Structure formats: C-alpha cells, structure tokens
Amino acid sequence: MGSPADSTADPLPTPVTQPGRAGLAAILERPGRAMIALDFDGTLAPIVADPERARAHPEAVPALAALAPKVAAVAVVTGRPADVAVRFGGFSGVPGLEHLVVLGHYGAERWDAVSDTVTAPPTDPGVAAVRAELPALLDGTSAWIEEKGGRAVAVHTRRADDPQAAFEALREPLADLATRHGLVVEPGRLVLELRPPGMDKGVALAGFAREIAAESVLYAGDDLGDLPAYSAVGELRSAGTPGLLVCSGSDEVTELRERADVVVDGPAGVVRLLAGLAARIG
Image (cartoon, rainbow, N blue to C red; front, side, top):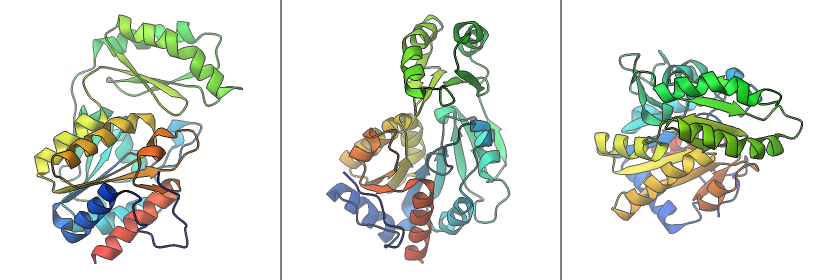
C-alpha cells in the first residue's frame, strides 16, 4: 500500500511496488510516448458538498500546461459531462493544453481542446425514465439529484444528517430502479450514479491508450469509479505496457489506496506530482 506524500519531500515519491517503479521509470525515460490520465472530482478538484461548486485546484491547470507538451497525451476521464468538466476545470483556450482530451460520461462523450468541441451520443431513454421517477422515490429523504446530461443521473447523500446511512438505505431501491430501465448503479463517495452499462473509466482509458499507441500510462483517481481504470492499467502492464497507479488519498474510500503504487494527499498532492513530473522531464 502506498503512503501519503510529504509536502516537503520529493514531489516524485518512490512507488511502493515494482510495477509502479517500472511505470514511473518508463514515463521519465520516454515521456513523448507516455499517457497521463486523471479523474476530475477528488483528483484534480477537491470534493465539495455541492458538485456544481466544484472547481479544479488553482494550480492544476498550470501544472497540466507545463506537463502536457512533454508527453504523448493528457486525458481527463470523468463521470461528468465533458463540457461541465471543461468548464469547471478551466481547460479551454489554455496555452500548453492544445491537445488535452476530456473523456466525459466515462468515455461516452469526448471534448478535444484542439477543436474545442464535444462529441456525444443521444440521450439514453433509460436515463430519461429514471429522471422522471426519482423525485417520487426520494420524497421524504434528504438526498438530492444531480443532473448529468442525457447519459446519467446521480443521487447524493453528503448533505444528510447521517450521509453514510442515507447512502446505504438508497442502494437497493436505486438498484431496482436502474434495473427496470436497463441501467447500472455506480457507487461513489456518498453518491450513487445511474447510467447505461457498457462504458466505464477502464474502457475509456484502454481505448484512448490504444488510439495514441501509448508506451506507458499514469492514472490518478480517488473513488470506486476509478477501480476499472486501475484494472485497465493492470491489464496494460500484463501486456507489456508499464503503468503507474496514483491514489488521490481519501479516508472515505480505501480500495484505491490499497491498490495504488503512490498515494498523495488529495488534489494538492496530485498537482505537486504533475508539476514534479514536468520539472523532472525538463
């Protein structure tokens, strides 16, 4: 298991696993063939009670802009709609980020900085049906709904008196609702997201890695929805592509921390890591 990076230490701490050390070495040795992939909420942006108020860490964009021209690609892989992540991240029109890609809705949507456009599939009918039924199902609870465009809808319990108890109480009824409309439930940090099956961060990451012929991969995340991306990096490693797994540390989720090669102290630690990579590459 990784350990949190000390803010006074080397911003590139030594990974605690041999595959992680090999992944970092490959990124540093051939940065022009490296792919840097990052979750948004909890990784580039601090978790806040109201997701509409989430914004990237103030040093995230400068760190990304310093690193992006030195690597093959930087991708933000998020459950949010791509345009929302772009807006909340402040990614559009930034010198150095001309080839940034945002894979929104777990890869179902894509924003390319070079064209500043989003490509997206039509609204899923199951999501529309669930959205119509959720208010009645949640009536009398303290949970609230986050609209995520036509590809997903999320239910949050962070504002409840007992957020974890509210989260657990809603898991089964929301799973039943999702099943009736051909959707799946993705649990996260006090949030349950209902979305179509078939796409996850692992699928998105693996597909983009193939597209750019990445020879090494770094993935940083903080939540349960990032586990498929961790698994995808594991599969890439098994196939001969070195990879580094970074956990943006959280006491709310331990699964990623236990699988990570490096654990940093939240978005501030991720930013230091990105800036450290940019400085080390030179």
